[in-house]
Image: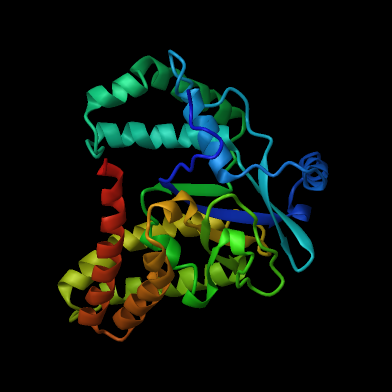
Length: 313
């Protein structure tokens, strides 16, 4: 038996891009226009529950047999924006990342556990299916990125602290950005950031410039440069390439997803991760490695505590 409809699956956070309907070619554009007029509004929790149910058969279904026909929707200044799920594509990509982590011995679980959950023959078949699919769809990319038991630091570079939205879902009281309609979901709380694509790209470019310049400058405290430097540069370059694939009038959203059910309300309200990232980058720009290190420590301490929740009984 899989998770019940009312049970929250807590471990995923999301970075999503909502593209204007006009950015989609036909026949996708007409399909999403009809979809938006319908009553069905599945949530990220619905998608997670479906994926977990697929893992129950023997052998498990590692990747959906058919691509999802669902999407998240948002209205920005009267314009419908669409974020397709593409669950099958994301499943293939997640499985490929899992395989690389297993080969590099970066997994937090023994190989025997992985093989029991997803037998090697199932993973090999999924990899072969993905290779064949990519030959027919070389330019396809997901509109959604996800992370387990944390929010990656690089995602916060795209947002400002003022764009944080945190509210009790049942209260109906939520501070949203002007022109952007609220998202209704079943979780008790919602914590998200939303920003226009042009702003996200601008912040990412500024962050990259600061990091690259400070890495080339002697005198910056070595520990801060190492911790906030090259790894974050590489991650931001990858993130920037992904964002460039989308329409410039898209909406970018960071959603804490099910993590809001395992992080105490007070900690969610006081979470200033985007502000910490901005402070760290500004400190590096000014050559203040000590302050940058302090901002980094706040971030890592906060998210280390969340990661450790996955091991709680």
